Length: 313
Image (cartoon, rainbow, N blue to C red; front, side, top):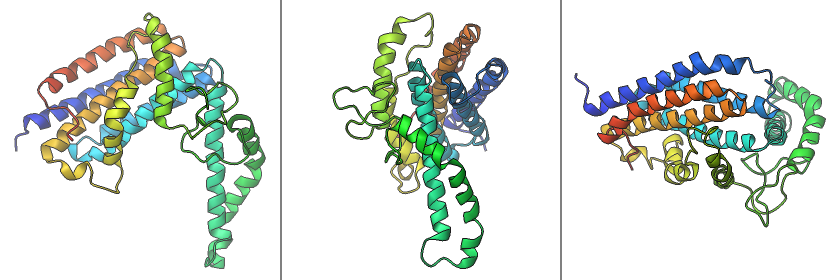
């Protein structure tokens, strides 16, 4: 059966995103791999580790290469969006503090998870002796070994010895300033959301990066616009709790939307690597990334113009 124009456009979008994956692995990762700082607790090491998540998602996109894989595509785009926000937050901090704050939150969340698992096997009512006698040991061992270190990290970087009740590692909103001060975590108002972090990084990027055109050849990615227009559909397309997006799409709508996810994945990945290459001082690779970006995004242009790529709402 012959493919429709929309299906051919999706195949082209899939091929183009995979070309970006190939270029990153061939041209940029070798330079990144020899960076001396691979410690994720440091600024450059954290940026490097975050960029590897983007590479992993590109490899995933290569495997989910049909329009009906839309939910996986949306999960990938949402993760890449959040990764880019984190990359900008870490890169805009000239110290290692933001990287350590992220690490402290990760370890704190892991400790809470281990405690819940231990409790499930050893304390919850109705559990049999057989269930309580085996798996809980490894959770208890981890807690005993790491608890003091995690509590110290919490106190220094998260502002308390209890796990923060939030899904973001960036703390609370400051009471009088929209920006969280560097260094000690804010004990201000409500928990920060992803959009709060986007407002912060965009304000700083537009006032600083836009004036440094020689080190910012790809411009500033419109995070606020992307979040406003796409974050809810990305969640709808990822979560299994409703049919808010998927229940309204016909076959062509699914395919067009999946192709759009490939476009956003390409754009986000390009900007993720822009930040890493720039902050690591890899100027030759940054120039090569600009050429790659132009080639990749130019391939999407006719697909967009023909109406074969776009989020269908």
